[in-house]
Each structure stands twice: as C-alpha cells, then as structure tokens.
Length: 526
Image 1: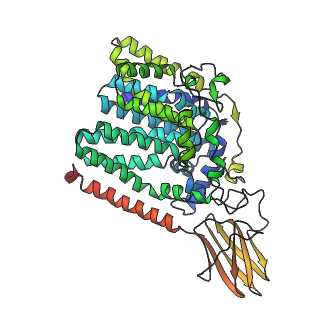
Image 2 (image 1 turned 60 degrees about the horizontal axis):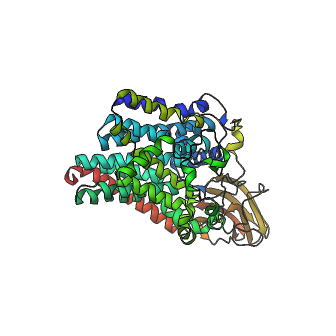
Image 3 (image 1 turned 60 degrees about the vertical axis):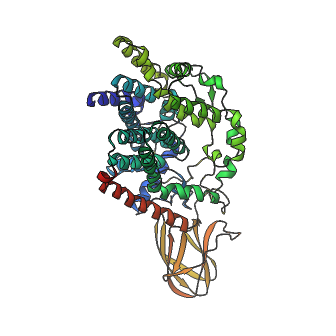
C-alpha cells in the first residue's frame, strides 16, 4: 500500500508542477484574495487570538470580523509554512499542494477499505483527483477552502468504514476530528459533504449500533467545530452578506447538457462564470453504466439530488431558503457529483479484465486532464509587503461588511484614537489586532472614537471599569465611540467573545472532553 500511496502522491504533483517550478504566483480567480488573508490570520495567531476572529489590519486598519465567517483550516496550514520562514506565495502554493496530496491519500484509503480491491481503489482515486471540476477548483479558481473539503471528506468516510469493520471506537474519535476539519475547511461545501457523510452512514451501517455510534461521531465533530460554524451561522445577520448575495444564484443554473459535453479546448460557450463545469469523459461512462445497471444507489442519489439543485427546477427552494443562497452558485453542487461519479469508477474494473486495459484507462484519466495543468492567464509577480499590509477587505459580496458601517473603508484614518468632544490628549497607544491600550489626559469630560469597526464583543474599559459603547453616531458610523470623564485615565479596548461565541466555545470544549472520553473508553464502547 505504501508504494501505491507514494505513486498517487507523485502523480498528484503533476497539476501543480507549473506553479511549483516558478517563484511567481499562477494567476487564478481567488489567489490574490487569499494572500492577505493568510497574512492577517498568521498575525492574529502570533498576537494570541485563539480562535482567530478579527483581521485588525485589513479594511484600511479599521479591521473586520473576517475569521468569524471565513473558514480556518487552509490558513492554519499556511501559518505552519510561514512559521518556518516561507513567504506568503510559497505558503499558499504548498498549502494547495498539501490539500491535493491529502485528498489523494484519503480517497485511496477509503476506497481500499470499502471495496477491498487495490485496482478499484486506484482508479477511483485517479477519477477523484483528476476530475475536471476538482482541478478547476485547484488550478483555475484556487478555491482554498473548497480544495480542503475534498481532502477531509474521504478521511471521514475512511474512519467510519474502519469503525464499521473493526468496531474499534478509536476510529470513531478519528472520524470526529476529520469531521471538524471538514467543517472548518469551507462554509458551504463542508455542509454538502457533511450531508454525504450522513447518507453514507444510513446506506451502509450494517447494525443499529454502528448507525448510532457513527451518527454520534458526526455530532461530536459538530461540537468540536462549533466555535466556528455556530457564530458564522448566527452572527451572519450583522453583515451585508444576505443583501449582496441574495440574487447571485439566479443566472447561474447551468444547462444540463453542458455537464456532459467535453471541453478539451476551453471553449467559452461551454463555460459558466468562466468556469468549465464538465463532468469529465471518464466520469460520465461509469455514471451511465451505473444507471443502466441500477447499481450503487448511494452514488446515484447524490448525483440526482445535486443535478436537481444545479437546475432551475429547484428555483423555488433557492427563492425561499435563505440559507441555501449562502452557496452563492448552484454549480457548487458539482463537488458532490465529483465524489459520487469517482466512486462509481469501480465499474471499470468490473468490466476490464486485462491489466493492459487497466493501465490504459489510468493513463487516459490523467492525460485527459492536462488542459488544467498549465496557467491559462499567466503569472502574477507578487510584492509580498503589500499583502502583509493589505488595505482592502479581501471579500467579494459583503459577507463580512458590518451593517452598522457605511461599507468598506476607502482610506486610512489620520489617527487611530481621536477626541471628538471636549478637550483632552491621547498618548502611549499600544495596538494589536484585537486590543488597544492607551493613556488619556482629559481637561473636561470627553468623548473618543477608536477608528475600529464595531462588532458584538468589543468592550471598552476605563481604569478597568466597562463603559458604554456608541457605534451609531451619524458622523462616525459603525465606529467605536465612548465617553471618558475628566482626569488621567488608562483605557483598554478589547474584542472579547459575545455571549453566542462564548457558548460556542464552551460547546467545543465539551466536545474535546467527549472526544477524550471516547479515546479513554474505546474498549468499552467497541
């Protein structure tokens, strides 16, 4: 098995080889967005934020609650590379590579455990790795978070499969950890893949005991990641995201035929949003055979339901379920089709008996994807200092723009702290991403503004005593304003956890305790 895993890793490097052999950054849809996020996340970690919530230097230094709503796992991996001395560009490149290698390793382990056949597992892995949409996410969109969901879904299913086979509760604990990493990888795709995991449990649990314990492992994974998904879900109402994204889906229902027509020459008429959405020639064949043979109802259910939500037949659901609109683009459901059609790849081995044909199919699966290996829009020469001190907000659709503000900032403030009423002086400012401390000498009662965007959780303390914050001043809309009495004072401004975020943190801590108990009591549970 080690040799096969090594081969999968070597083959998986091919689509990223052009990027890895250049010091520049391949131009992608989202790559330039992720660089400042990587820098902001890393700086927040170094300053002691855990979990990371606030990007203090973005938005012209007014800050924003970016990491309350934006996934963490890709930036955690990138931070490891930054910690050992690499720059933003190479941290991004290597994080993409790690995610792709993990998806290959995880898919092979799962397919081998499930089918108990090396040939089937190898072909399924190649279909998964070299699915056109998977490679588009990797090399054209550079959708950082979505790529990591491809990596962790197979591990969730692998550990669930191993638990079903061995009754070893240690695999339950590992599946819970994998679920938590899956959820922390991307907002919407992780939800789709969580649903895939639930369907897998209901389809393949052989006993009620296995079913119950497997569902428990998913629930435990939800608890472990609650510190992220619960605030992201419940505090989203404080942003402009719903307003700016509510109509995005309407023009993004691809015609069904576009999924099945090969686009070897990158023809624009076969694209949606400049993205080729084809299933891939070698993914269509097992799909059609699977339908014909009425086999593998699990995969076919996933495919049919995904196609439904990618078609305008589901328009009523998109119009009436606000949560569904957070997916932004209906074609994102294609990620589920990638997994399901890859899983149906076992059919090739069922019909191909000669080894030479097996090798030929393997080669063709890889070779047919070559159009996605090479940069279509060239390279970007990156000045990393700009992205370490990025002035903009790094989002597209207002998903982290706070409703009390007048929108994204347009320039840096003249001062971080200003006196806006009365007479006084501010001096000795110490600032981190989620903390400000300074001294005040006030000749009269005064009012100050911190040119920091307000969000629930910000607190102001004057000489250790909490004072009220006003964030709806018409002249300082969405900024933290507060009173300070006459005299000399020490002021601290801190981003603390809101009641909701604190409750979510507690749930995650309880999840860690349950996880520990699962490991300790694994023999009794097994």
